[in-house]
Image 1 (cartoon, rainbow, N blue to C red):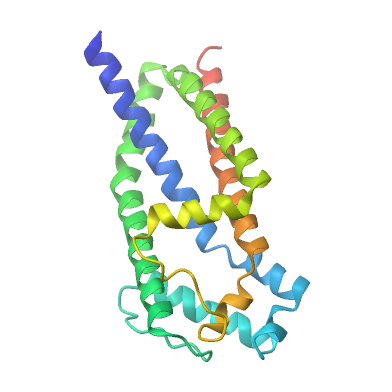
Image 2 (cartoon, helix red, strand yellow):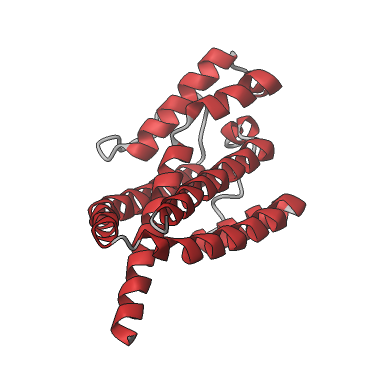
Length: 208
């Protein structure tokens, strides 16, 4: 009995880590979201660039964060040593996320395949619903006080204060408004909720 519970817990954890890392991967690479804010708020004008030039800067930043062979942050806009160090920290987190994604994709596929063979997809329903509830509460807390949430988020993930950019030294921060980051978080949580809801539907079908 305990062995079964342990296996079910590990399976649920692997599936959640896969969904979490997949949602992060989609969110950080979903450039249309940033493009929307660039056009809506004319962000290029805040840093002395056209919106088209700013998008090129954003693509350069993503290339640096995503690709291991890109070892330098070659932005047109000036960057301080602390600012560059922070982006290196973010790059490290990106690769941690990609490692989690790669390590969980095959086990997740095998877990789903086994559940389908045993017609036990219903085991997904309760964990998925509980996780959806917890995430919903977290989103409500975030929306009510995003600034505090954003600060706590950075204090948890980073052991230094390099993320506190000085706009005079790192003008790129002027083109990365809080509203954009909040939209990223909302988009991220919506993706997780969507994947979990798919799990609930998939689980209910096995009961029919």
